Image: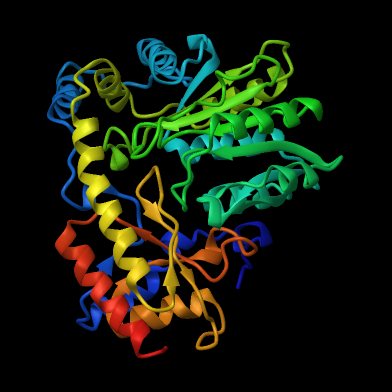
Length: 398
């Protein structure tokens, strides 16, 4: 047998890895309640009609060719206008690369900046591809503490303490996946100032910038001018285009510090040719057309957030911080005496109840352990059914 590389063998993605166990049970006839993937299209959310029509029009009009590797010029202009309108960021369209989903943007960035032994500072817990891609390129992911009792906001002292001479990049995910945390202007400013004092570039992952329930979202790149920033975003969440696979990365660099890395990102974009051309055409309409679906979606999700937070905190042995953004909640398992770890808990829950969630250590083995992530996208009836099952499960074990 030809052996797989150690590099590929070490890749993990907890959000989808847990599905393998669910598939086995489903084939045996067990009903599965999927609360593991943040895909609005799997529930009662749909891509707005005008975006669908724009895709159909693009295909009919013959926009079925290879487009520029960094993205269609009109889309990059629309992205620049959106970032200025929503996040107060001034960026040039030439400093944007359109990607096949935001995950590809993470891959391009990691592949262009991480050398063996480099450390990348990430929020703990965080979106798993950051950990996986840093490891894939022989770097070391290092997580800084976020404080659960304060809504998973960053521990600024720990953040600064974790910076070493090997730190190559700092990542901020706001609103956060898996916690739904939203960072304050004050915290963001402090983190950016610390990064500047260490001459470190920052990643501002803001794909949930349109899904906010409490307070107002603050983009990182608009706060300071002396920190080189990579901004990551996409169309999957706010524009309900998950299966369309379109994202982007932008560079904000006043002193030319990122030029070499940006060249690497563009080189990688050329190797994979381009993102889908007709989807890019539709994305222009998404950004420039009607935006009315966003407040409607947020209003519906707010009710589901409130329901999930209430129900989970009523279950014996569980507690959860209230997420002000995104569509995830990250409950803590108060006592782990019945299980070896949170992965064992998730498997036990799945086998007995059919409720599929994601183990917290899959988002960070340090600050994610003894937790699990729940997606609160489903209708209230489905959520209540799932929470009833989780409650019965916990009552038998407490």
